[in-house]
Image (cartoon, rainbow, N blue to C red; front, side):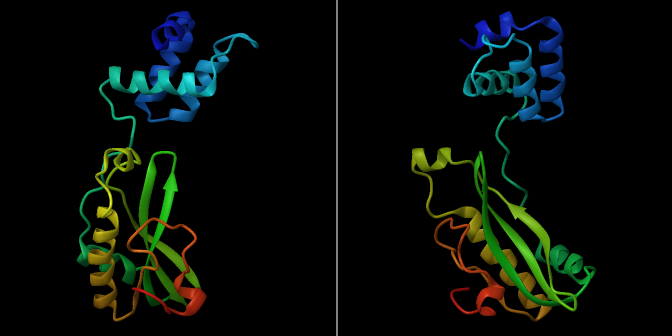
Length: 182
């Protein structure tokens, strides 16, 4: 099916899709595929996404995001000291996208009240759930290690409300001024 859609796609659209794949623009490539067909004969969203994933592989690129590099707490702490505001906490927060779960490390400040993104930790997509390689969640373990070390260097609390499982609605540090698991 993938090769049938690709073969039916006009040459200009195929070239545009490959250019978009090289730029890591998945959604725009899906749109390019769908727009390359007349209304009523367009492939479905999932079929077009399959073609884009196939083009990523054919062009020697990763379709899913790879694991992030290990974090250096000293570098993160140095970066945190350059951000505006007075640090009051380092927080680990789950987030997700169409590929799976990740943990964002955030610096919480006051004067002014703000949150600053320090790093994103990702160690794989949700396929890990199907093949039984999680839990434990390695991104959570790294967030605890690195986030705790950054918080210690800054002399502030570290907060991670859901270290054992992804939960993007877990209580935030400001919700209870750090109450709960950390």
